[in-house]
Structures are given as C-alpha cells and as structure tokens.
Image (cartoon, rainbow, N blue to C red):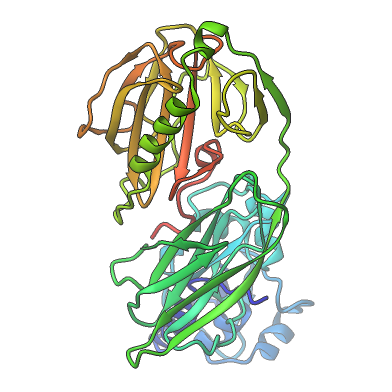
Length: 426
C-alpha cells in the first residue's frame, strides 16, 4: 500500500527553486580559502555554491564518507583562493518534509536515520535532540533527506496518507494533499468521513477515522476520492487493519432503588435524546491543540474506556463508552477544549449531564454531576467549569464519566490528551 508524505511534493518543488536561487548568489571574499560547515549543509550544496566538484572537496579534505560532514568542520575549498559563499540558510529557510517517528525514537535517533544533524532537526521542531517521540508522531526534517513520492495517477490528488492499522476504540487520521481545492469524499466501514482543510488554500485536508470499540478485528476497506469537473469519480481503496484493544471485563451491580426507574422505555428514550444531539456535524473545528484533563490529576481513573460490561439492571450497553474518574462529590469538572454547550439537563441514566460540541463532528459528554454550571448555547473555553462531580443517574458512587464521540461513535477520550486533533499544524 502506498504511503506518501503529505507535503513532500510541494516541498520538493520549493527545495529545487530555493537551491537554484541559493547557488546563484554572489560569492564573498574569505581570506584563507576555507569554509566552516553550518547546520543544514551538505557536501553537494557546498560544492555547488563554490563552483567546485564533490570529488575535489573530498580529495582536498581527505573525506572518507561524502554523506557525513559535521557542523563546525572546516573545509579547504580548492581553487577558490579566498572566496566564500553567501550566508548559509537558517533553519527557518530550509525546505522541510514531514516524516513519522518510530517506536523508541528521540530527535537524535530520527535525525541519524535521515542523515541529518540532531541539532538542526531539533531546531526545525522547536525541541531538543533528546526529546522523546511517540510512534507515528510527525517530525519535520530537511526535504533533501526524504525521497520524492511517486505520482498517484489520481487527478488532483497528489498524496494520501492513511493508517495501516487502528486499535478498536481509537481514532485514526487520514490526510490528503491535492493540487487544487476539491470536495473529497471518504468511506470507512459504511460510514461517511468528513474532511477539514488544514491550510488556507484548502490543498491539505484531513478526516478522523473513528473505530467502534466493538468492531471485530480484521481488515476493512477505506475509500478516498473526489468527483472531477467532468463528473467522473476518481477514487482509491486502502486496506486498514483493526487491531483488538486491551480491554477488560466488568460486572456493574446497581442499587435496586435506581434499577426500578430504569425501564426499557426510559433507557431507549434517553438514548434517542443524546443520539439526536451528537448526530449533528458542524464543519468548523473549534480547537487545534491537545485536550486538557477534564478533572484534576489528583483523581485517578477508576474504569477506563472500552471495558466490556454487564449490568444487573436494564440493557444499558455492553461496553464502557467513556473514562471514569473517581472523585469526591463537588469536585470541579472542566472543559478540556473550546466548545459550545448543546445539552445541559438531568437524565435518568446519565444523571445531570452536559454535552459540548467541539466542531468537526466531535462531542464530549460529562455524566452524573451533582450540579450543572453551564446552559445550552454557551461558548466555553479550555478550563471553564462545566459542573461538579456527583452520583446522579445510574451510578454506584461519586465520579465523573467523560465521553468522546466522533460522528456518533464513542472513542477513547484519553487519546485526545496525548495527541493533537491533527498531526500537521501549519
């Protein structure tokens, strides 16, 4: 399956123009005919700037490996007799491409894999060479170290970056680069994907791929494409593996006085109420950063997302659709990201409940509150108080149940604490 860097094509073209401009710059006098290597230099670029061959530089300096020069190394420039190039480009001027970190990577090991100086890659990413990276994390490196991708042969679509695999209950991300703005479509497991532009021109778009926590492990088809101006559908299909999640089993025993009011009719009506709320899709994303924890870190997880469950009462569901945090009654509950309050009311199963719309089909829910502090229609910012922890509804003790849904599908909210909503932030 083709895996393409989302911005490599446009950056490769930019790199060619940049280097052509750089090589055409006038040379300035240098008294001793030497040149000191700076971050971003390659032997080929230095040779081109001085109008000499790589072989001549290698011979003059006794270089064993032309691909390995170090920052601060002083090179003799044969035949120049006192000339030096214009200033080498700063890190901000170096054309870059985005690559993915592997398990165990830090900036230094990733830089070495691409033949680049760790200090340069660190500067390109506003990090330090020892910064640890999570698998799949996007990292900028000089585009010269990334081979250009082959053509997709898919009209205006230049590149598609889709995940090879997604764990049950997790959220994948799909990126598509186009040569002009087009209305992309995506289909995954009979579900329509919604694309969002990441740049002003609308050439780089991404979509969430939410995976149901109960979806059977196996290989599923991901379809991406668009309709041409002539009405022709161009598309490409990718296999994506769904991997079993590390979920436990749990039996929930509910007090009889609470169980008596949870008739099938009540449970069904409440389900219809919340589904109607989170089925709406607004195209504008209201947040661009990692989520913040909705409750103090003093309060630990008592039941994680995805736990397979059975209840001693009505058919409430067969897995835990959120993350539970054990906390005393009255503890503050915070908005993890900007959003709009679309529900704030008491419910039979969920107790005093709040739902936020974060845009892009992403909603978060907060159940079992003792007190609600917001009202429908209010706009909240990260850290605003939504309510207080309680024990209302179908609850066995004071806690916060935090839920996250994308296009109605419950996914692990903790993933959004660890990762930004999208991985390329221009």
